[in-house]
Image (cartoon, rainbow, N blue to C red; front, side, top):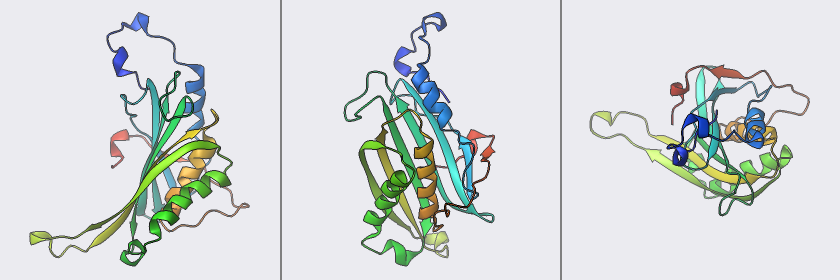
Length: 208
């Protein structure tokens, strides 16, 4: 899950500095031992130009065999920090989910969708700072030889925030809950156990 910084590409293998232990610990914490039963996780390539070190996971939410939502969570690490980060770490999240047209027409959908993220972070005790993001409602309508295709509506949430600890397991759990909420699946009751994560082997299978 480690990305080699592109701006150090002219260094030889012997010159490469060791990977920071803080990054290794944070990356390991992104592989949860348990996840919600509706979630399927996979390791995906991380962007290499945003920070010296990065890791990423992708996920899909299923009900039976129907894929209801997809997302990705990227962890960025810069030992020197970056402007606006408030620390060495930054998490970048993306979620896309199909929704009924009447839901996307609700003017309160944006604030509600944003609250799904912040409330999920709070529920899992995932301390954070400098959170920001956007909520987009998209309508796709076919024309020409696609005129018979049904109109589809989607919600997209893009967000980033700075975790205040190296252990990112609570942030991953909150992101999983966010995807389930976007897919119309309520949070698990406290007394219901999660399951070992299902993982896809082929990172190219993740759809953006």
